[in-house]
Image (cartoon, rainbow, N blue to C red; front, side, top):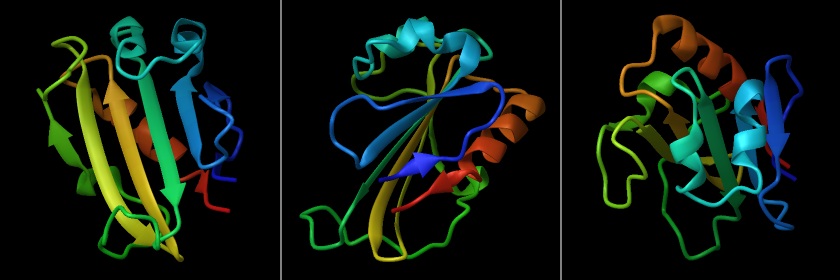
Length: 135
């Protein structure tokens, strides 16, 4: 099962019975994200709220090929989207990364409740990404 190691300030959610997807959300935002509904729940992120969505599948799945990488992923390497089709609210920023890590296709999406996350919020988010574990 894909997972985030436990850490103060974060709540881990499993949006379905599918063990390949996990969400980490800033603890004060956890209640507003349950039940999680892709994209519509993101409207309720606080300005300093973050939701990290990680999904892992085997490379033989029909998604990829992805470039190879190692954990921990670096937030600075993620694609930054200030606007995209289906964006739930104009304040929500999306960051994306698709890679193959240790035999797994890994899709990680980071959503901020602001278009301008502070350095402290970026550092907090990177620390949570560092705790991502694959099966």
